[in-house]
Amino acid sequence: MIPDLVKIGPITLHSFGLMAMLGFLIPSLIMRGEFRRKKIDPDFASTVAVAGIIGGFIGARAYYIVEHWQDFLADPLSMIFSGAGLVWYGGFVGGALAVLFVIKRNKLDILSTIDIIGPLTLLGYAFGRGGCFLSADGDYGPPSDLPWAMAFPKGVVPTAVPVHPTPLYDIALSLLFFGIIWKLRTRSYPAGTLFGLYLIAAGTERFITEFWRNTAKLAFGWMTAAQMVSIVLIVGGVFFINWVTNRPAASRLRTAQKSA
Image (cartoon, rainbow, N blue to C red; front, side):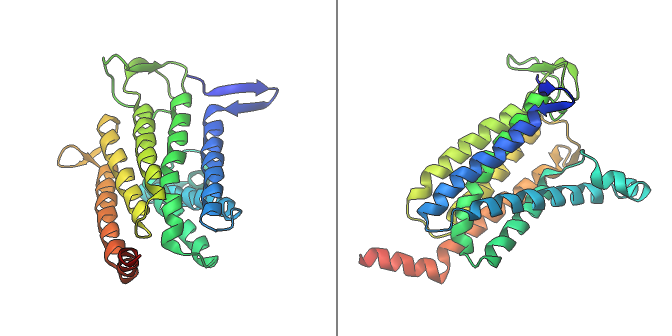
């Protein structure tokens, strides 16, 4: 793998940093185009992306601190400013709250806006997992003798034993779900439907890939904490779609479409 792409004197371009940057820039550029198509100020895309990153970082670190409270009490500064210790579902909650805040503050329609943002989060996540794969940061699965199993002898967390390349599973499923949901965006659905589909897709993706991670099993002897959160996302997505479909505004839209 390639943790460090280029070194120029004291400056190093890390593969994870590059992929994280692409995971920020490319969805932001696509978001600008969609905002323009939906008659929303395209410059708001940058605001959304920055809010998501900041909120996601704070949420991910906060969750990690709660999980390791005794370590935090022993050395709080190290826990706060360390580059390690970012929990994905904490980042999801923190990022979502930050994005909702800026949408509300700018007086935009929440459901229509998150219909654009949700699916693009899957695309950004795929780039982030690409960074994990290139840097081999240790977020891979257990040893495997499958034909596509890989060793990461030069990774940030090296292993000479072939293992499940879990980040590639994440990338494949995220891109698949993104493609399906993004293709549906030009059809007529009640506002909020695509975001509900995003919740289902994000939960399903993580639930599946957790089977090939070195993660502690906390329930029933096989279920991880991430899988429990994934179930909440899937169920929440189903209920969310049901709510946006049956709320009065959606009923009026269906009536108008039948009359047209």
